[in-house]
Length: 57
Image 1: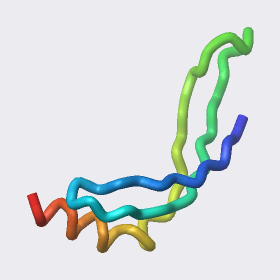
Image 2: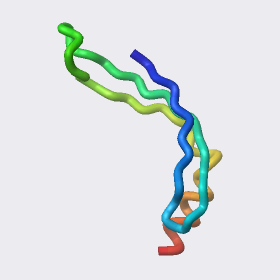
Image 3: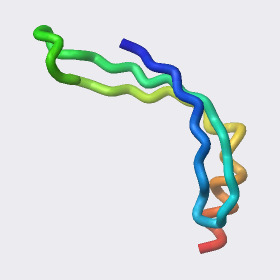
Image 4: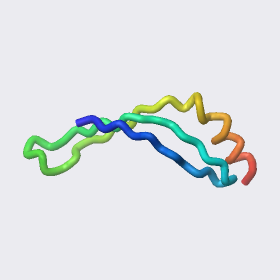
């Protein structure tokens, strides 16, 4: 199962960043539980903002 998300995230320095990702869920054969999760996203658009936020701590 795959889900597409659009995140709006507030960094520690108060800056708001947005990015999209896809979460891929592998489920158990009985379909009652998640067996594995893989998150796929491109960090390039927000990498500088994130690094700036960590530097301001």
